[in-house]
Image (cartoon, rainbow, N blue to C red; front, side, top):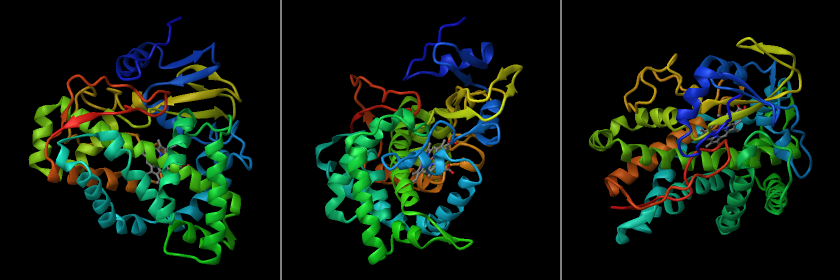
Length: 383
Ligand code: HEM
């Protein structure tokens, strides 16, 4: 049996080998099934009656995310999703655009004079967390501790993006307590923010419970921050390695949205997702048993030549581009419009005020670690 080895910075040759030789693979050491081809990954992500997001998660007071939207199946998922969709609307997201631009410009003004900065620490890692904090209605004076918890929470939850149920750490508990207070406060004094709208949201006479509000708030941090950070960083890394495309996008900013779609495909910020078999089933002639866990390799599906012409070529004008970087089916990323908007504005503001970034030649790229989130810990650049 082939030994599974995966280079965290360049997993693509391994994906190619697995798609060809072992597209549905059972790792008897871990007991996990691994699925690599585009149609199979799509099916695992979307066919919830066979592939459960809830089994093996289990929420608790300390682990509200384990029972949240991303870790639930219908009918609970249907109810939660329609409730949160009432508050997390396209209108609310679009209204954020001017403020996102302002935040991006403020961040740049912090390093513009110096001619150098760390793209992750000073820019792409800052923007999404400030946006989420403001969206949720976190008071500005609490921004510092909120950012600290959210960083710790995300680094602890990296491999648990949807596979919660492990140990629960101090920052998680601290943040849970903090959100408890914020929710209580917003009940008394609602504002024009997402938490207040979530408290109000009602479908068929039902509202979100306090526990569900807590779970959703924490989920937004885990699911929304580092993913968007990596989309922005991966865009600059990819453009740097494709200088002609970099020049083209700099000259023609209208290409930014389609370049972002191609970064989502080519260097997907979320490489894999977990599920558990809810019933015995078959994929590609392999028999999977109820209760067995699976990893659906989104990063591999997005490089499958059965769906994408020349998948190893970065083409910022690729069309069609049916990538599944935001998932597929009922769990399709709720934050996709926000992530796209943030990445678009982040790149526009960078290109406008600074132009082309030069990645430090000697910079040693260190992968984030884990198998879910794809990106680097830091990226020193000059301009
Ligand atoms: C580039 C950035 C992002 C990527 C690549 C990404 C990717 C994903 C993926 C693959 C899923 C599907 C999970 C599954 O099938 O189990 C998902 C779900 C989700 N994402 Fe995102 N995401 C991003 C940004 C965001 C943002 C900014 C937010 C919110 C602020 C967000 C909130 C969510 C939520 C709430 C779900 C669960 C939806 C459900 O279960 O119905 N994501 N995301």
